[in-house]
Length: 318
Image 1 (cartoon, rainbow, N blue to C red):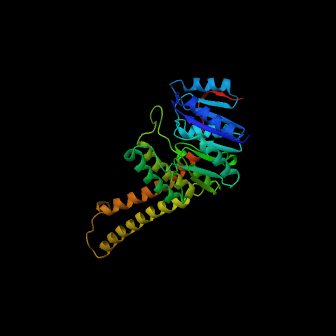
Image 2: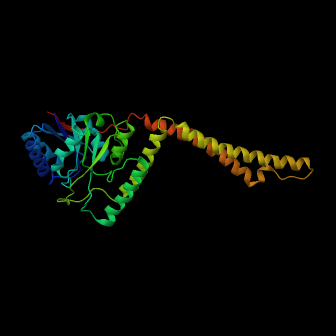
Image 3: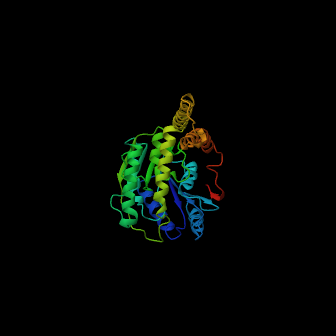
């Protein structure tokens, strides 16, 4: 199979028939063998019924339906597990991503040898203050942290070689950083293609301003895991030891002052009366907790068996 198109969606009933018809037309014009995997992220507007209807008339349509809304990353994760095409395309279901871009994305993977090609919506039809400006700041930060020179990390329109999606784990809200995940997995030939962005035709955006806050936190988490995920002691051990050492030095200094006073025959105050003693103890305790709690917490999070388990109500698989 040439192509798998993975489409995560949430309440996009009106867009689904038009989107599939557009995708199918492009595939037929280019003689591609393909499948379209719709992942219904707990829609409540009848989107799944539309997918079922399409599947009865088109063998290329497959589907996954979640029992509740999990988010875009879980939807992509499950779609990637099902994908079988040599090249995997992801796109949003709101008709803002153009299927006409698929042939060139496919060519860049197959002929140019890219592992991943990310779309770049250079001209956007989104509100400038609430989406475009925050997006520019977000992407600038992502470029700096990841070292990947992409203009639009969060563009839903991307193309991947099949082994890329089979060897990365998209969880939480990490869909924004799939290029970074791919790079950390050893797939470092990452390209970019300027793509056409269309104004939303139906409904409204499902993402609020909080996605930028979550995005920065996810980026920090991903950077940390990429740097210290397999060697957490290099971070927790160093800073925990530094804090403990600072506290120990402060205790020694307070003790030395007390001892000097005794030797000189002064009536020295109790060590416990010195504020530096409590600062020293606080530093030592925090250092120890930082060392142990952080280390164990990261190990537990990374080894959790439940991180990518989702309640799937039903599937369409032909």
